[in-house]
Length: 303
Image (cartoon, rainbow, N blue to C red):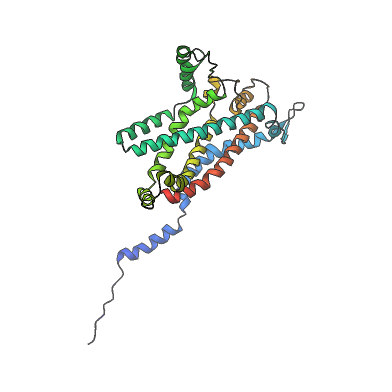
């Protein structure tokens, strides 16, 4: 028996879809990000080039002419400037480690509580406190734990040798916004730990400590280090709180940059200030070089 075959015509959708798909393939994906790229080029690219050129520009005091050289970069790594840079790195590292550990513990307590009200309250408060800085933060701590602060005079902390205007006093103040910031960073990462992993570990006879040692902590380590990098960057770039609270008592690179730009110590050292800024950019770039691979590794498990 002969069978009749009918040719199915191509639908208008298919016919019209081919040019559309071809056009979509031809359109570069980066065009969607073009406004952001233009913004980055204007907001960050031009200042970065200005800092780079000025940091390597050396002005001859006799003739007033400028030429390219390494004098500013060399001076930025010597004497008081090297001390300030090293002090900033130490301060930021301590804030990052202590704030990272305490913030992770607090975030885990919130996640483990399963209380929606507690979670919303802690996250809301963390969002507010993480952005509380500058002169208002310094004033709040001076009024509370300064030499004539409320708690200092009430508890007699001054007689015990307490002073807020030291390296460790500045660490405590920075932790005020670093710990809430770490809570905001680590809470989504802790939510990404799947309950099946803990159930499988318990079924295999593992204790809670063994689960965290062999599963939880290794999975969370990239996110934990990434959060610490964020805290390091925040403390490393902070200026207003330290300027209002400790002044020149604690040497910091941000304070040295402000003094050089304003001519507070020596006049005509603006390019040296930009060389110090370039040192900070290099330190931040080295820290980010550690963060990005770890963030990529963490996303494989938690996304």
